[in-house]
Length: 188
Length: 336
Image (cartoon, rainbow over all chains, first blue to last red; front, top):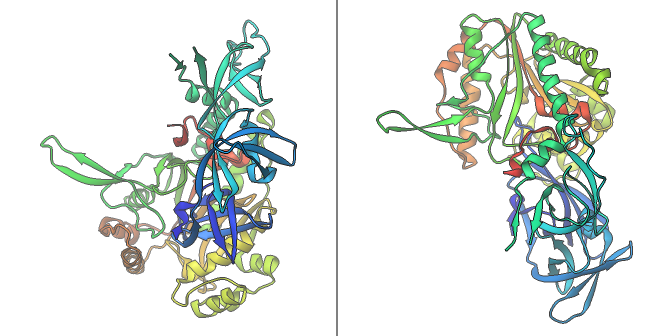
């Protein structure tokens, strides 16, 4: 058992005799009325989506999951494949379970998988992930003076982010996977 | 040895600079609008001994010591309302405040940040209709000043009685459900898990949040006026139909932006409501605050007035189509 404070991406909830994994949630407090959490979930048995609004403090049947590190292998558009690091077994997950997190995955990245009865139901990314910049437009003199201090760069997994103007191709950088923000350079 | 540049916060500001620049322009236009209408911009204390009693708000406590090291607990204000009403009672007639408010137990990002900017104004010898007009004039002014330059969304507000909104969206006449018992049965009929002792307001929000707010997302800018009397909060009951309170909220694309009242000036009724809220807080296991008797004196002493609280960050959000409040803040709490 739990309550609305347990609602996070990847939380597994028993709802109307089915199990759902939270894919997105939104906290709202109207101030003059009770606060609530709008929750988007997906059934882990049928894949069907559901939207439920919980009142703050409401009791929620949170289901315990096992956590295990898995390594990202590849995706084919419809599903993502990971490797169990102990058994070397390949595990497939539907793309919509991974959702927006998919853009941060790169080959060989370790993530924490949540398992329910042996089935991978969600993943948790490291807070910061290291990438190599593969495309970066050169800084033009006067950019900073005209207010341009960032530029778009492309990373080795295809992810595009805003980085400082001085970042060059080949540089290793960190990205914060919670905010999508550039998190600094990596100097070895 | 690996070490990192620490640049997330600076990068956030740099990335959002264009949005932030518009925010500063909006701050300026807001002040200009009110100054032109002969309002004073005022500052009220952010630290209070008696914070608001709203059962659904959690003020942040702060320990403050004097020069003898004697500690006392104060609270960061959740809105400048009490202080501004004291100013009305002391003779001010048109005042606005544009400053930070603080609320605990809310999300870091999305539609909330623990500290946020509130535009709040009060005017004497007025009612909620005066405020509606001023809200509409305000949006027109902002658009005239900045709309083209920054490609702001043009906001055309329509006014809707709460009863008409229910009729349009649900085909249900709210008139039939203005008491707790009937609304409880309506909730059950519509499949909500509710208990017979739930407050009217909570029952109302079950339906409102699930069925009406999603519809408001597609309705653009709407002033929803005349809330059921049970949800009067700090407002006065309508003089022409006492089943409703003179309270309105402004919704833009489903986001609640402002809450306005023809202010209650009956201190006995105000005291009753505060005591009711106090005991509700106690029942809910929340921190209970003392009643601010100076505030009650202000309610008694102030002339007929109306006021509104408008979330300034959310205003920037809707004008620029920013889904996350973090996009319009210099340093969201999330980054700290």
